[in-house]
Image 1 (tube, rainbow, N blue to C red):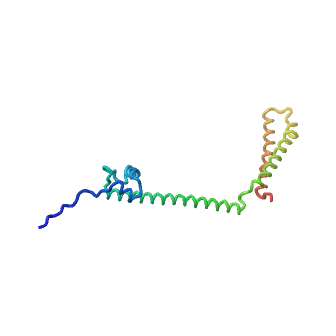
Image 2: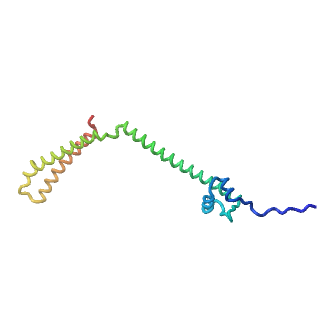
Length: 166
């Protein structure tokens, strides 16, 4: 009768140098992967081969999955930027935006008109009416002049918005 062989209960091992040849990583990087929990720590420069290789495969799988997530995030940002650019171009074609060069002179003109109106109202209309008035009456007159100037501004803006200059 032949004697039965006892199965080897020792796990297969692989040297740090051989593992580096297989994975293309340095032993230092293997130790970092061991610290991260991917592979077991070596014992006297030797790794448990099955656990080390399966852990390395898990590490690669996680790395690919993360890279795929990064790509998806970049694609999402690119899609958002394209959408915003398209919305901007559409608003321009609909003439929803007005070039600064068109708005600047108009704002300057309306500001000058408002200033001239305010000065004229204060100097020519309001000043002669103030003599002999008490504080409450003076404030009422000033509010009236201010309301007229604001109304002139509002009317000018409304007219420009409904029919801007060509």
